[in-house]
Image 1 (cartoon, rainbow, N blue to C red):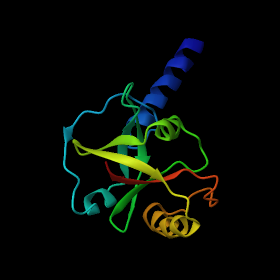
Image 2 (cartoon, rainbow, N blue to C red):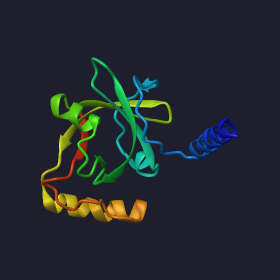
Image 3 (spheres, rainbow, N blue to C red):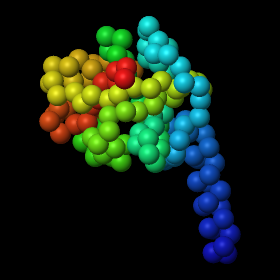
Length: 147
């Protein structure tokens, strides 16, 4: 009976995660074609989830929500000092992947409360909620720029 219950629980978990587009598990090196930076990030603005790769010496990738403001993409970790944030603090280079295209970028931490507030409005319009931690001194928000 116990084995049957364990099997059912494992199967239920697999079914649940297979239907989810956003599963925050990390991976390694991203596959795709290196693509020139677009003139407009509107295509990226329209998608909910992208992947980034940090730490070029030992690639680490993760799925994230993304917002675009003034034709600049932004990624946000809230107050969570995630592994990818730690990597960006050491080396700001990252690769962003969407639809098989890889964009080579650098991350720059946002420290302006006004910029964070403006981005929060865009974030709310897109995802239906504001960033959890509105304190820019505690939050990890990055604008993504060409290298």
